[in-house]
Length: 185
Image (cartoon, rainbow, N blue to C red; front, side, top):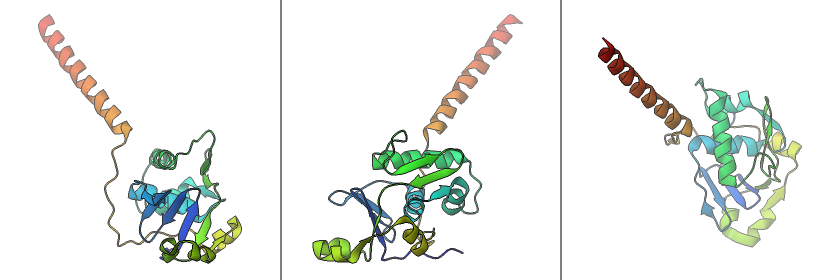
């Protein structure tokens, strides 16, 4: 099994701070960014391997272990992440799509030695360092978040609402067809 997340590691990119131990993403003046647990885990996998291709299969295996899910769920997860980060797939600043293969986190990532550095302010800045991609991968391979954390249910996707609409349209058409057939007899 993969190593556990280093509880003291904190990642900074753009205006964002990613704290794996706290399962928290904040922006600017530490305002929390709402993410589902699966979206958070997807972001963590990408950030930990910043600059490298993370295949769809690797993400699916890491975020949804021992569960068979379609790639469309991963694509939806990444779309939700892009929305939360204010990113755009056509001109990405954070997540680059490599069609048919996977995704790459392309923003500069700084690793802060401890979570307390966030509270300590400027004095703690000496604890942070910029890590190039190869060094980041060597120090922090893809790891799963702590298994003891409870996961909130995923938000319903728009696809479910569309399928529900189609279902009701079909029900109405069947009822109308049955009525027309009965009247024709």
